[in-house]
Image 1 (cartoon, rainbow, N blue to C red):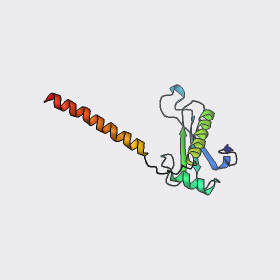
Image 2 (tube, rainbow, N blue to C red):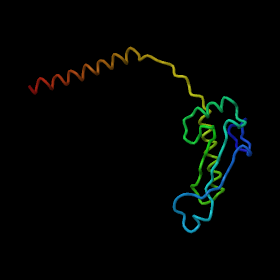
Image 3 (tube, one colour):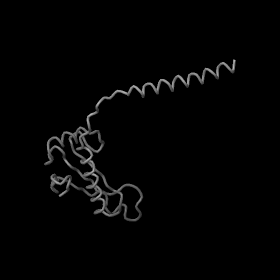
Length: 137
């Protein structure tokens, strides 16, 4: 069971793991041991709430395929168990980040005093530059 929030969890049978050989240098065991993990999670077929599914699928993350499957590859450590835990943590983080509802932006106007300050700064800068011009010529 992967706990997303106190009320929502993902069942173990919804997440598929496959062990593969890790890339890169690894010494004598590199061609013998399958320590890297491919995690696959089908968002559309999952038990997550419908609005969460829509929000997850709408995110532009390269780990989400067109079919709505999240694919995470974990190969940081030599231990298959640690890579599995890392993949689950990354899946949990991805889902939690996607379900956050962004605040609506409320358009605001700059205050009159800030507008005045801005214009005064520009005028002052122009005067300084004008003084430079007249002394050079």
